[in-house]
Amino acid sequence: MITRSRLAGLLQQARSKSLTGQLARGGMGSIAIKVANMLLGLALAIILARVLGPEGYGTYVYVFALISIMAIPAQFGLPKLVVRETAKAQVDKQWGLMRGVWRWASAAVGVLSGGIAAIALGIIWLLADRFSELQLATFLWGVVLVPLITLGALRGAALQGLRRVVLGQLPEHILRPGLLILLILTIVWGGGGEQLTADKVMSLHVVAAGIAFIVGAWLLYSSRPAPLHAGPKPNYKLRTWLAAAWPLALVAGMQQVNTYTDIVMLGVFSTAEDVGVYRVAVQGAMLTVFGLQTVAMFVSPYFARLHIQGDYERLQRLVTMSARAAFLAAIFVISVFTVLGNEIICLLFGTNYIDAYMPLLILAFGQLINGLFGPVGILLNMTGHERYTARGVTIAAISNVILNLALIPTFGMNGAAVATVITLATWNVLLWRAVHSRLGINAIAIHSIKN
Image 1 (cartoon, helix red, strand yellow):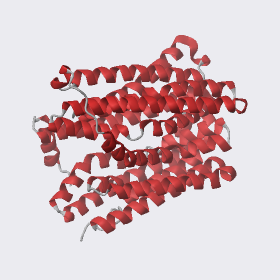
Image 2 (cartoon, one colour):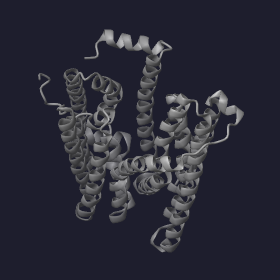
Image 3 (cartoon, helix red, strand yellow):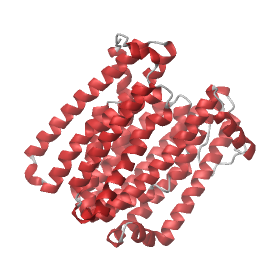
Image 4 (cartoon, one colour):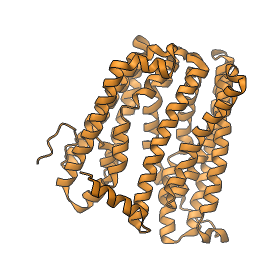
């Protein structure tokens, strides 16, 4: 258990200049970034839902989901590769290699983004008669967003590789959504709120992403190791980097597919208004799993440490207590939604979104299952069994696509929510079995701590 004395010890470590202190500060900073990002995301959803209305919000959400899926091949798993290779190059003082991976990754992302944008524009040109002018304009602005987001992710990855963990997350996770909120509110307070449409909001997103990218580039330039200022000749390990990027791209891609499949397919089989209402349900349901995400970020270093030490008895206790804390938090949130869900939706988003209540309850129940099984994905990743996480993510993504195809045409928003719940259950069962077979740990919350 994390007692008051242990918490005091963590705070003392965070103030030290040792490696442990750096890790503690990075961990606490990451938790703060995660919390702030979730709050900004909720605030942005509330503002957009009220300013755009269900149909306009649905158009914006649908296009952004398409853009996020387009960014999967554009990134090609390179941000995670840049984190790893930057850290290795700094340790080995291979400054040419560090410069090489930065330059190669940026060029690769630029080419991929440009190619994907050209293909997307070609498809839109061929199918232009199937979309409204608002949808086309919103999508065109969204295409501009792809290289800004992908290149921004690379800058953040390089900073994290240089052990500037908080700075690396700041532009994309805090500055970009924060600036977008500020721009929207400026227009609303300036008297033009009634003129805001989905395409104009997407153009504001481009502005916010551009500013965040410039800030991220400046932070990276300011944080470069001194030897890089001399301009060492870049070295490249293209074959090694490409081989490493494939599995990283697969995991990142499947995670994005899982995140946005329901939104995209609901947009195909239903109306923009339904997409907007459903997105409100998704945003609310994320509060149910907030406890699990926060707990997982805090305890993940201890998972790795206890595994290395071979102390599986304490690891079991920590996993069980983490799962119980997340599960209890999820029960509290879903109980509030069950009793006051309609009132909360109307208060925050407006009466136009009252139909989000049922999919919200369904999705919240799915996240309750997530909390029940505990931080199984983090546990596998922290103990060197990430291939099982990748396998589970892939199976879940395929299942998600099939289930949405089967359920959305008949049941609409509720079908999308049920598909997500079944996908979450499948993912958790697969990873729970992998944890039990590989580590001998039972991660489920109702498991007894006594061994």
